[in-house]
Structures are given as C-alpha cells and as structure tokens.
Image (cartoon, rainbow, N blue to C red; front, side, top):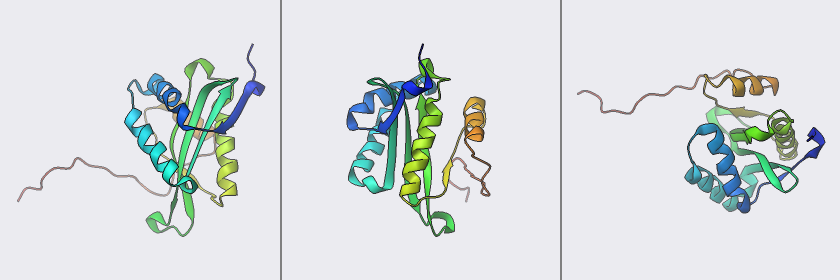
Length: 154
C-alpha cells in the first residue's frame, strides 16, 4: 500500500516534459506539448520568474505544478504568482500529491518574496475548484472578461 510519506517533491527538469504532458493528457484529453515546451523554454531563459515542481513516488513523476512570477500587473506593486498548471496522475489521486505540490510552491514562492498566488479554472471543473478552495484560494476582487475577436461593423 502506498502512503503519503512515499511522495517527494523536487524541481522539474527538461527530462520531465514527456511525463508532464502525459499526466496533463489524462485530465485534458488532449496533448498540449507545445504549451509545456514554451513554458519550459521560458523558464530555462529566466529561471527567477518561474517555479516548476514535480511530485514523485520513487523515480516516477506522479504530479506537477507550474507557476510564473508577475510583477506590477493590474496596478499591483508587488509580485504575484500565477499558477499556470497543476496535475496529478489519476492513479495517484487521493494520496496528498496535489497538497504536497502546493506546499512546495508556497515554500519556494515565500523564499522569493511572493505572498500571493492566483489561478484560473473552468467553472465546471468542480473537482479542481474544490481542491483550490481547500488550498485556500478565494474569489479574486477582479472579474476576468473575454470575447470573440471579430471585426466591428462599420
């Protein structure tokens, strides 16, 4: 039987890309290799602006979290972390993997002087929203708006 103590969290490396994409595909149903490759390249160019952690059970990557640091956006004077992605292999769900990832993100971000983290989620992904709520996320005092880009009628 596997226990929560079997999990160790470490920085992600370029060698983890395939495992990250595989875990993400199990949740999203699509392969988003280009997204993760772009994020990895950005992190390699500017490591101070990114925090990428992976949770392992033995030598197997079973979860990951990707965050980037932003400074001064939307009128803020201090940096804020944006949680871009978090994923846990469904075969390892329920063992505290996501909690371990969030704890490590908190630790690294705190050492970098960042005190706030934000993220976005599909409002129909109830499991993810419950996890975020349990992790201390609350509604932000901002509203995210979007629209289809189309030519204006003249």
